[in-house]
Length: 262
Image 1 (tube, rainbow, N blue to C red):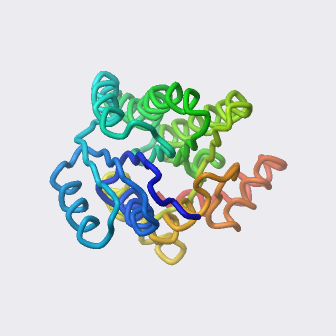
Image 2: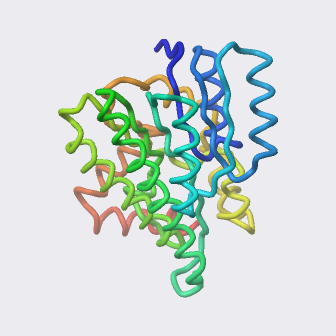
C-alpha cells in the first residue's frame, strides 16, 4: 500500500510494534505523528527516520492514561497535520498476577491506558475523519481478548473491552468511509514482558512461539487504508479462540496445563 504523504498517528511509538510501524510507514512515504511517554526515545527515532526517508516526523510526549493530556497534545498535532489518515492505537501494558494479588493501582492503570486512553484517542480523531470523509482506526488488542488465561485476568479484561469497542465502532462508522481494524497478536518479543512477566517464567515457556515485532508491524502497515476487519497472529492461535468460543468447557479442561505458564 502506497502511503505517500498520508498522515499517520501512532501511540506507544517509542519502541516495539509502534516503532516498527513507524519505520515501515516512513519507508512508504508517510508523514508521522508519534506519541509516547519517552520523548528521548521518540527524538532518537525521529532522527533515524529523517536521515533515511523524506517524510515529515513529528514527536509528542504523551501519557495516554491522562485524558486531559490527550486532548491537549492531539490538538497540537492536528494544528500541524491538518488532517489524519490513520490512527494506530498501540499504547498499552499488562501485569500478570493472580486476581487476589493485583493491586487497585495496577487495575486502574491498565484500564486507564489500554481502554480509556484508547477510547479517548479515538473519540478525538473521529470528528476529523468524519469531516474529511475518510480515515482508518487500527486498535492493537490481543489474543488475550479472545482467550482469557490464569494470571492475566485484568489484562484480558482490558483487551476484551477493546475488542467490544472496536466491533461496535466499526458498525457505527461503516457509512462514513472510515475503516476500523482490530489487531490480535499472541506474545511478541518486546519489552512488554519486562513489566508483565517480572520473573521471566512465561517468556521462557513461550519463547519459541513469540512473534517478532517487525513481522507484526508489517501485517499492520499492509492493511492500512483497507477494509480489513481483523489481523490475528499467529493463525493457529486464532483457531484456538474459535474452538474456545464453540467448546469453552472442553477447551479449558484440555488446555489447563498450557494456560498455567505465567
